Image 1 (cartoon, rainbow, N blue to C red):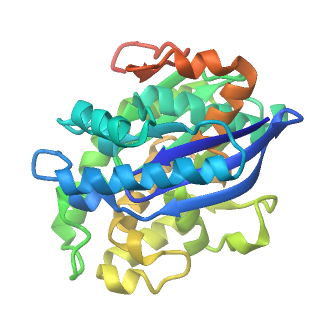
Image 2 (spheres, rainbow, N blue to C red):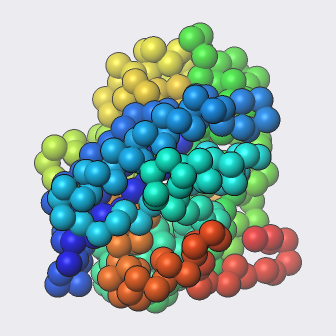
Length: 333
């Protein structure tokens, strides 16, 4: 059986085609379209008609590519840049009418659960009680669990791109100390209660996923990606603090010259570093492990294990998830 998953993110539309045999999705082909949707978000969060047309064209190309590779219809989903748009329904309808692909959206909690599943499968049971941090463009997902799926999930409005826009830390000139201070304060405010919960759970292993963490890990000395996914990569809090200060002293053009920081993500790299360092500090984490498997692999695993009915059940709705976000004093979700 050959499956495909299509991920519409804040910067890139990415297709992964994988053989679903032996209990693990084995990639055979990847393709991506750099649309940078977050750069075209209007003042109210809307995506304009021309941008939606570009998205529909990329989705159509991805569908054709999946067919050429002998895969089933793509499991296509969109993250916060579409999920939070006021004209979300219009976007989803136009993509479907143009391409025949039903682009799903999922809550931040569903994203956290599926990402946790991918990370758990990669790390294995020897990882023990596992905590997850995932910095996206629009949100930060946090999860914890002792089993296959998490027992606690939370999605916070701390995406690297979102914060960069809100606090203006990605312009041509370096941000002011006041801007950085306000950014840190806002991140601490949102993370305080969730961090207390993770400290209380006492995870044995903490993993960080997403392109943001991968680039920050490389900046802090992790092995380059060309050495493959099976090299252990870690990120230390002390190194990330120094990297954060380094990024804060540079304009976005100079950040792109640093190891691991790509030009398209240079503007948001500082916000990502602030979120990552603040989370590690408040959660009392000295080191996190960079995990190469995340939400796309989680979706493929759920499809392999639960069959096509799981994804089909989301027709016209948000992708369902099974974890019940725990509500305790001081926590919301």
